[in-house]
Length: 185
Image (cartoon, rainbow, N blue to C red; front, side):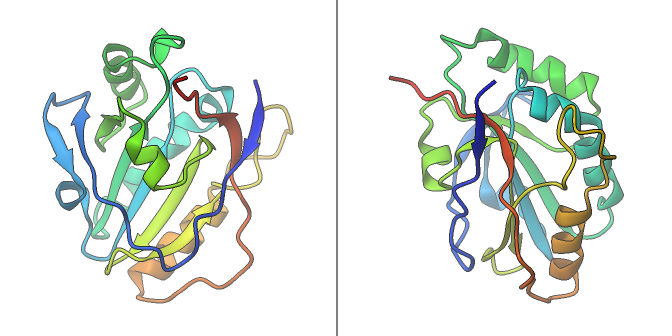
């Protein structure tokens, strides 16, 4: 597993639009379909990455905890499925159901959306405010596979809480860390 950090897209960046297949519902969804009135969380994840597997249940819990907060959630997988078939749309649907995802899990076949977000790793987290301006990009928390730190979601929860209150987060933001996105050649 190649350890890669987030590229840290500049704060204030407008959320790039997308129109991708939701592997659970079978429908194409745009950013406006998943947008939350108080903020939107965009997560780049995949099925096979141990860093994502480490957080899967907590990612689902995070979305559930904010289900009444007007925060939209969406996950996107952009990996090359020819080389990593376990990240294909059929397996994404199974993964979403097994982990209790209540948010769309979208397939970025062309990888153009990952490039637009400057995503580098899985997991990679972005929090946009009500105006769809980036207020946070980085880690879920300090927990990683094998480091024995409990998963708290402290960093991303702080950013989401600030977004729901209309505040900007200025504290130092730590890059996420995980497997590199598996780019097509």
